[in-house]
Image (tube, rainbow over all chains, first blue to last red; front, side):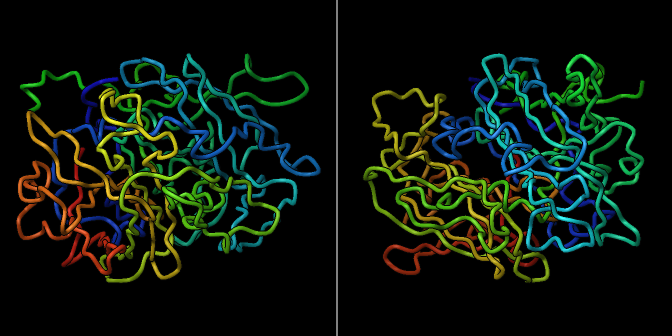
Length: 232
Length: 220
């Protein structure tokens, strides 16, 4: 494990992005205080199943019946930015159902819930950093950010990585979604880097007569490449 | 084909995105905020419809060495309003000052398998969170320095495009005056990083995302 991790790169969004209105009162106004990475930041919990429990890699088999929607297989690798795999790291997954409705008391828009779909999953990467899960493609849904605002279809992902410094929560988007280009949340990440969050349809991982395949690699912060005295 | 996740020329850190408001059935598990026992804190069962609680409940564990304390507080936005859809995480060493992590190779310092040092809590409707943990021991800092007892904290949630990182120090913690990280915070705002002892076993630590009392957040 590295002694130091790289800082955030040019693809990260700012905390304040006025087009996403909720950031206005929830983003700091004082500059962040840059601190050296100590053992606190370069260590992190690794014992993910002790923390969160066993894997839930198939979101379509958690209830009595099959959920409605387009069945999909999402697979890829978790890497660091130097291209090395991140093995044995947990990916937590949550999403809306095929109609764009979340199983959540505060989501009350006029779209049906699916009794056979919760939308919560969890996978851990193998030694090569690879992961795979099965779900249904989520629908778009309206939100109140601005008039006639709709979120593009997306899957929420949360990763711990090897250290406190490598924590990441992101969203996976789908190709050819017309809402992606006008979404204030995806749009908070600068171009062209926001396209790192757009999955690619993949025929090779598509399972005949069963489910569409999408590829999505997740890249965590990697070892700091700058010499120690330059970084101090 | 337009640029996407698989384009080599775009390879680099995946951008952060907000958790949004609907993470409660996906992230905070029951007991996730109790690092030492089996109290049912951390999750928001009131937001998860019946039959859809897929998250685990924290299991039993053996005794953990150290002084058990609660760290409790509220998350506020820049207008002083409570933030009811934030997720707060902590990461800390055990009482002996060892991190339960493969990257802490100081074998001479005892490790406790049942103490992960990681906690997760969703805020309530009133913006409140609460962890139950032990007071962390001191860990090394840059050079030959020794850090004062502290826990790293991350704050996420709706309206937070990326995690905000801060630290909790303790008002009666040994070495606060010489801590190399605390010293980097502007003197007039340093108090925002120090939990106040409310009672023998409860520390109060409020998080102000913005405003006159804005918490010091770190670039790590």
